[in-house]
Every structure is written in C-alpha cells, then in structure tokens.
Image 1 (cartoon, rainbow, N blue to C red):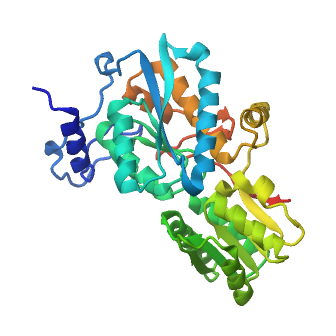
Image 2 (cartoon, rainbow, N blue to C red; image 1 turned 120 degrees about the horizontal axis):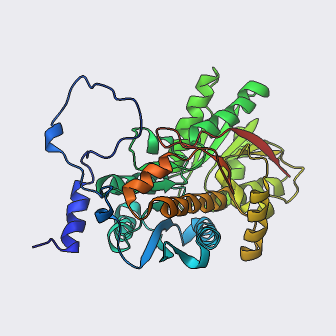
Image 3 (cartoon, rainbow, N blue to C red; image 1 turned 30 degrees about the horizontal axis):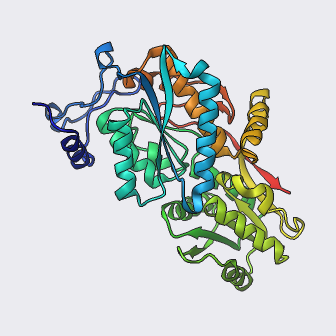
Length: 393
C-alpha cells in the first residue's frame, strides 16, 4: 500500500535536517579521506529515466514570492516578469504539446510555518519542475532543503552567499552575492574616498544580519573599522527616528541595507530633510528608487550597486514591455525572474520534464544573454557577475 500524501509531507519535513546523496555537479573525482555511513544513505528524488519524468497535461514552474506586506512590490514584479517569460518562451502556452503554467505561492508568512507548507505544495501537489524563490535568504535555505531531499532545481534571487556555500547540487543563485555587493561599496567608501565614519542601517531580520556581517568583513579586508550599525525593529516605520540617529552620529557615509520599500522611504526622508551625507544602497533597493528617491536630489549624493550589463536590445525590449504591462520600470528582481523562468523553459524544451535532466541542463548555462545581462553558473551554482556603482539622480 502506497503512503498517503499527508504521510509523505510529514516524512519530508522530518527528514529535512538530514544529509542525502544527490547528483553531483560535473567535476573531477576526488578521493575522500573518510566515508561515514555512506551505505546507509540513498537518494529519494527523481531519476533520469523517462519513466521518472513528471506526468500530466500541465507543466508547472513554481514561484515563491512575497504577495503581501512590505515586500509586495517585489512579489508583484516577480509574477509579472514570470508571466512575460512564459509568453515569450512557450509558443501558444505549450511545450512539447503540454500546457505551461506558473504555480505561485505566497512567501509573506513566517518561513517555518505557512511558507514551509507552501513549498511542500509546490513540490508535491503542483509537481513543479523547478522553484524560483525571492530575495529572502531565509526562504531560500528552506526551499533548498526540500529541493535537496525530493530532488528538484531551485533558482534563487537571494544575494545570500551561504545558500550555495556547501555546494548543494540543486540550487542556482541568479545574481551577485551580498559579499560582492559589500565589497563594491566598501572599496568606494574606504579605498577611494578614504572615509572612516560610516553608519550602516539595517532591519531586524536575516538579511539585516547578513548585511552587518558582509559589510564588516569588507571593511576589515581594507584594513578599516567596521561601520557603526543601527537596527530598525519591525515597528519602526517613522523615518524621523532614523534622521535623529544620523544627526547624532554625524557619519561621513550612510549605507541603507534594508528591503527596497524601507530603503526608498529612508532615502526620500534624508533628501527631503536636506541631509547632505553620502548614501549607498545594495542592488535590490532599485525597485522603488525611480520616484521615491528623487525629491531634492542635490541634498544627498546616493549610489547604488548595479551589474555591468551594457543594455542589450533584449534588455531594452524587456524594460519597455514591462513598463507597458505594469506601469513601472523593471527592477533587477524582475529581470532576474524573467531570466530564471526563461532558462527553465529552455531546459524543458531540450530535455523534457525530468527534474534531474533539467538540473543538469541548468548547470550547463554559460554566457546566457538575458533581460538581466549575461548569466553563467559556476560549479557551486553562483553567477559570478561583475558589479559597479551607479549614481541615483
């Protein structure tokens, strides 16, 4: 008798914390110095044979996006970009005679609760061939554990470098790491401008803690002191308190390492107040900068991390069509979502609906020209793109 779906869910959750053997990335075979209980472990996910291809008339690509709360704009951009990618890469809404659709789940709830249930639904109920996650490092770590246990590809928009640090073969990170972003900011502050009095503003969440850690290390690498850190709690929505902190600290530079909505609000407040302190923002803050940050632009010089994409015809076309569809300019999150869906669809077209074969195809992505620029995955699943600073005007 086969186990029920609810039993499978319970078993999956119970096994998430255990290591499993999964298909290795293509690399030279290394002889281990020790083997611990290797005979007792087995891979429980899909195989490469046609018998293990996902069945059904509908092929789904999973999307875990924040659809409510302060990150709703990010989630809306992800859904809009994913729908554009389906339209552009699946003629007549089908591949190999099977309908293509998105399976969208909300990532606004606490990760170890409703979001974990959402991931299980994508994996087991929707049989998603791959799952694309938002910029949340917490959600990405959860999804990659499920993906590693069941065996499905995960493409994340998170800049959290630890998501690919232990070389889990199922995860691919689209875009630069937070460590790389911190290095670009630190080089300009400490290396070029020779500043030392820096204020780092973060939120009381996982991404905020990552920002403190990566900026601290980037400063130390340049033989400079780590920036002073001010943490915004979950209820601190009034920028007035932040302005008081800035006035008291009198920093030479401010780093706004927060979610895109908060970063836009804070920069708007800084410029409205006529504060002249130099400001820096990470790449994902781009989404809401076009309007909210423009007030009195001469009051505060502001720079944001960006990749070295040169604006190809495809990128320009995507930007125009995204604005026509949504009324807003596309953020890096939107462009990366578009590319993530596009490369999954190309893999489906080439190798069919087997999750293992799709994973192997994604691992071969090299020099892909997309809406976010050129994409290549190294053996750990990272996209080693180059970064620079652009001025917000």
